[in-house]
Image (cartoon, rainbow, N blue to C red; front, top):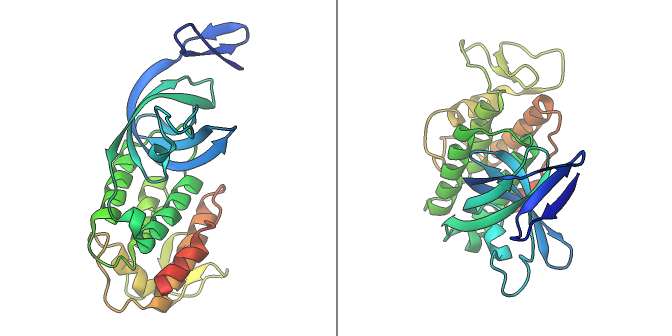
Length: 264
């Protein structure tokens, strides 16, 4: 498979000696990763509303007078995009880009930026490529906006988001139907009345703390009785829950930084 360009700079795809013009698609997207490429370019992973998770080559983005500057493609940025799209290519190109929202607090607040970077890793490690999910995109857009705009301390923000994401990713925990179901079985995603015959479960204390996080409250609402120790226990449990239910999931490298920042 080869990239080529016509006289007007439009990229084309050559496959099996046939040339297919890509479609121009207008969409919105959230930046989940950017990597330096060559002397001045970027490869950017963007979760878009209409095309799912895609990788784009942005030529010359790191040049001083780039028409599409690297600063536009910082992780978490929400963008309006016009992109060249072709199903046969794993690496697409961006034609036009405009910021949807300019964050005010995230860039200058270490707690918010640490939470955001951690969640970006969780999302990036959870999503398959080329699978559109408009509801998930709308949720993520709202979530990052709330992370920037909330005036509260956000101690359980990441936990709430991780639980919310399970609904979109297909492994949402079941309901607790009986007060006697005092253990949460991470392997089965269900509440149970006794210790299972494996090691993947939450203690009764952690199980009780999990339930309020599932209630339809704001991202920044703090459940009563939630201690720092319980937050860490639940974080460990939810990361294990993701690993048990998503084959491709890897623990975020930013976890240690988030723990240090939220503990300070």
